[in-house]
Image 1 (tube, rainbow over the protein chains, first blue to last red):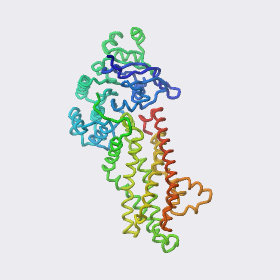
Image 2: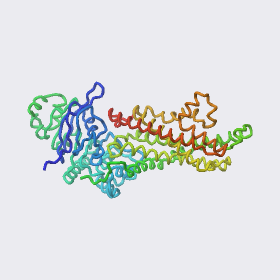
Image 3: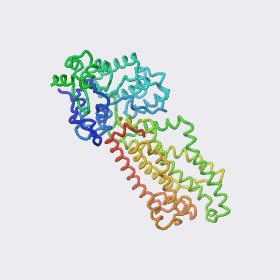
Image 4: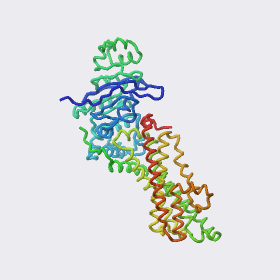
Length: 253
Length: 272
């Protein structure tokens, strides 16, 4: 039996006045896959993710998430997904434990206390639980945000720069955690990252965005091969600077 | 599979989660708790002394000693009700938390109800010390109004929520640049609410405007109880009818503003 794609986007467009931030984007993310959404600043990644989450209404196009029309049945889907971004914060004056317990209730997590304890152990948050969220270091905030994103054991996890503020050791552990979580739960992950090594390690597929369009997509190894490069970072630079990108994109067709 | 049981319809658990969020915030800051009670106390003391002075110089005040104190305390219900609602929303703007909240299953209607409950808590906590202190200080017990007090309180609180919804709709649209609206908008109603004087003091054309808002029904009703010892059901009906209308307008404005925010990406950009 064919599984419903975790995400299916067709002709998605977002215009802000005269500016077209996302321009007729179509892609599918199979259930259980880890896909990277890459592109330079202003490429349209954040706008695309905001539309997938339902925070932003598209100008046109359709979005199906976990088999549901996101524009019509958003509230059926939201309990089944979660999101983390270093650019969206948790209330500063509340402690980590208070924040997590509130979000656990918002997501309808049963056995809230046990789930928080479990995540606190996984993300080494034990000593931070009673500390106000605003007094955490950037790396600690990132770990708390990820714990919040995993509270409801989401089927679809959208991660924006998940290791941006972490030291190499913590970042490596987190990547390992995400690999284990995905393998154990069958969850789908959509990752926006500027860390190409991270994308190579975690992702099965890469969507390359530039100027609001998806200009290439393939597994990381295939992109590296097609562009004749050694790393995904070099491919990213080719695409971002429009070097050799034509040859790579043509090869894709 | 997600291990969650989040209902797709209205959820009391989500409402209470948000009420807890605002309660934690209030509980964690003693200056906020002091501030809640501070202004109602100052107002009560000020108007208490004015009452003492006027008792000997005004036959109108002498007929009903508590008329000014009751007015000031009930006005604070309206003001605190609106402020409590709006400040809860502003807390989400300050902490840039709207994006996180609205990718959770929380519905705008649940947030609205949570902010109403929070507003009720803040209003009671803010007004209660002043009402209790008025008894020993000025020999005025507002609870002597009896059951009508509940009707007055509820109607003013609901009007506060309606104004709060309109203000938050505007703040959602214009960002934190519109924060000051939370503090001054309600005072547009003071002159026409007949808080400290009967509505017939106003020019005829302004009386027409005044009767279009619920507070004037409440304060006229309050004076009817204090001066004549009667409870005016017609005034209660007027206040309730108008409150339903304003609550509907407030809710419609907030939901419209929420949709506009989703169209323009404002839920992720909630700064100035």
